[in-house]
Amino acid sequence: MEYGKNLTPEEKIKIIREAKNIRQIDLAQGLGCSHAVVSRAENPNDNGKYSEKHIIDAKKYLNIEKAPLYEKECALFRRELYVWRELIKNEHMEDARKKQKELGVIKHLPFEPELNLLYDMIEIRLLFKERKFETSSDYLSRAEPLMKDATAEILYEYYYNRGSQYLFDREHEDALRFLTLALELEVADYVKEPSLNYNIALCHARFGRYFLAIIMLERAYLQATSDEISAVGMVIENNLGLNYLKIGNNEKAKEHFENTFERAKLIRNERYIGNALHNKGCVYFKLGKYKEAIVFLDQAEEFFEKGDIDYLENQYRKIRCLIAMNKPFGKDILQNAIVLAEGNEYFTMIFEALSRIISAPKDNDTLEYVENTVIPYFMKWHSYNKALEYYDILEKAYKKRSEAKTLAKYQRDELERKILNIGMSCFDIYKKMIGGEELV
Image (cartoon, rainbow, N blue to C red; front, side, top):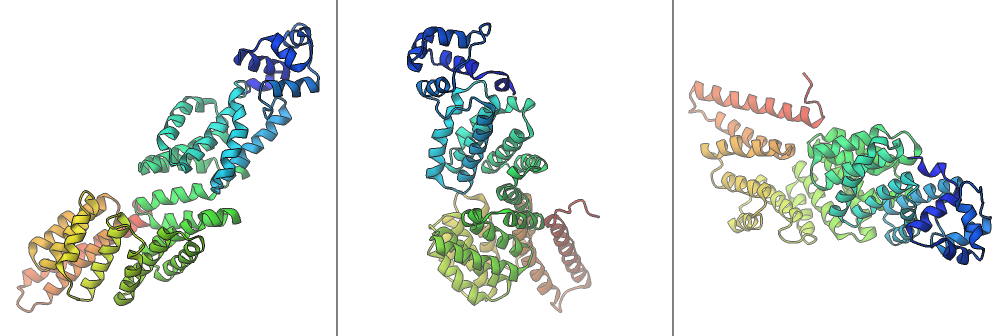
């Protein structure tokens, strides 16, 4: 990738002239010089040179005024590429698109393959922000064969983008693999960016490794500049709260959700205002303060579109609060939730399980359904918190049964065995949550 470094400015101008199908004589007229000057400059045997004014005029005539032709210009151009990347990262989209037009001149310079590839890698980030994922995927596929001889700088950008693409495509294993490769290359100051650790955290959270997710999120927060904090701080805060909630640190979770709420109000982001209210309701649910939880959940509902994922999760938590309070509620609430969840396998499973638990909480068929269908489903999708919630429902049901005085000894022993197995299963889940599946 050092092709351009071995060429003189005269040779580079010749390549561009020929690529644009411009004759020597036309270029000479554009420079206000004789045809012989251009001919000698392009003939390696004549050792002809352009004056500095000729080169400036040539750039103007060829419409490549911002093109780097000297080595020092290439260094400055590389720096501008990273200025562009920062604009994209911090979502200054208008300025980013202006910078894209300015730097797009590099596409006219085939003798600068490294700068061209770096430009492409940064343009992919812009495509991500614009949610043009099909186009970004095409760019990455075209770039893949070029990675064999790429510098560490380019490889980092490629691994980051490839991992992010897989994350958008919900292919979390592949996403984590490429993002980890990027992390291993994170050696120079120019790649210390919070979004890499944030994306890795999302992958760990997807697999239920909440402790590892928290480590990466805390690292992302510490790495963020003041500008980045304004752009991504709210999202990091929200995810930190979610992961702290999942490991049972309710106070820490509450603190992060309150911060999220304040940030969301400040920038008038209604989606995150709703999420923060919902999540605060979840904290109070975990604390057993069901009345307070419902107040927040009712407020959150106003910010969600009926039937979307946030709305369904909010309905689920409200119903769980009512069940925990032993409050009667109309069957239409659950029935409406089931209807709204149609087509969504995950929430259909959740509401079907709740329906059975409400209608026949002590029935053997219900408990077997929870144990053999519902919990394995959540385990399959690494939804460990939901699995733990339904293990808790099972455990309470079995304990209630074991207290019956009419039970035979073998029945009581069987129930105690089931309760013990639930405890062991929950312990296994906690091992997975800290990323310690291999622990003895």
